[in-house]
Image (cartoon, rainbow, N blue to C red; front, side, top):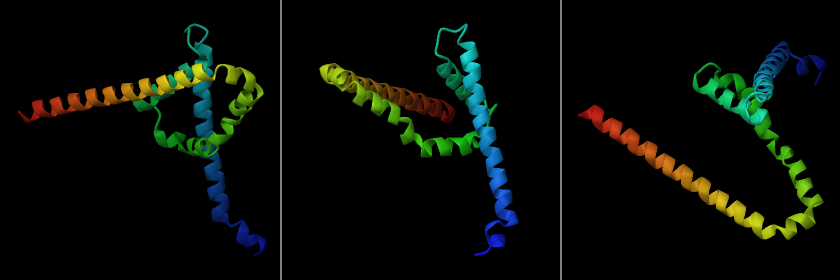
Length: 140
């Protein structure tokens, strides 16, 4: 395989295009993070949460298209396991503390899961009933 087969014009063009869209999508996400950090000076919430909520609102209002975020989103999801390494190291580092509070941690995690499942379930049922009710009103 010679050099001309590896570096074809199409492959270089695809790579540059993909790199550009990847940088743009990261810039959008990072821009919302920075704006959230800036707004957290006046809003008593963490900046990352404000940025995430504002990104969600921008997506819902169709200000930002989901396709614009997909290149970096796919990359982040692919390497997501690496983001959990610091947490795992922290658990190992504070093993004695975790073991002393294992019952409290377990109960909190289990109750959190139950509350989340119940909340999602009730919300889904409420929205399904509301949609069915709206559908019945339209058919009358």
